[in-house]
Amino acid sequence: MMRNMYQNCRLVHADLSEFNMLYHKRQLYFIDVSQSVEYDHPKALDFLRKDCTCVTKYFRKKGVECVFSLRQLFDFVTDVNIPLAKEDDYIEKLMELNASKGDELTNEEIIEEGVFKTSFIPRTLNQVQNPTGELFDQQPSFHQAVTGLKEDSVLQNNQE
Image 1 (cartoon, helix red, strand yellow):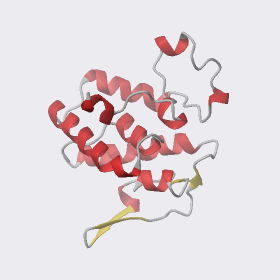
Image 2 (image 1 turned 180 degrees about the vertical axis):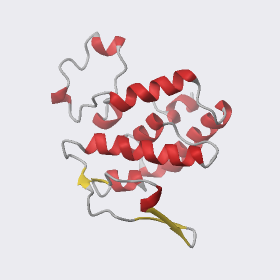
Image 3 (image 1 turned 60 degrees about the horizontal axis):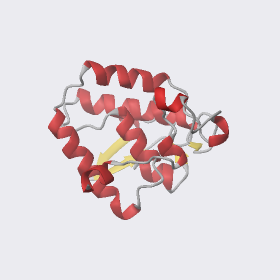
C-alpha cells in the first residue's frame, strides 16, 4: 500500500504507524491521510523514511518473520524500475532473502539503518553535485531507486 500510494497516487502518508493502519475483513486500510504530502514535496523522502522506520519497527517488535529492512522497504516503495506485474515477485524474492538471514538484525545492519536514517537523499539529479564521480564509489548512495538509476534489483540478482 505504501508503494501504491507513492507510485500511483504520488503521495507520502507522512505519519504512518500502527495507529494509522486498520485491518478489517482481511483488508488493510490507511487512515489519517489528511496530512499526506505529494511525493515531490521537499520533505517527502524524509517523511517516507520515517514512515518506513515506524512500519518496520512495529512489525519487528511483533515478531513478524521476514520483515523488510528499512532500506529494502524504502527502495521497494520508491523504485521506479519495478514493473507493476513484477511487484509480487520482488516481494517474494525479498522475503526469501530475509528468511535466509534470520529475524535478528546484525550489528552491521543496525549501523547501516542508522546511517540511512540520517543521510541526505537527493530527490533529483540536480541535487547531486557529481552523480558519476568518485564520491559515489566510496560512499553509500541512497538516490538510485528514487531517480531511476538503480542498476541492480533483487529480481535481477536472482535471475542470473
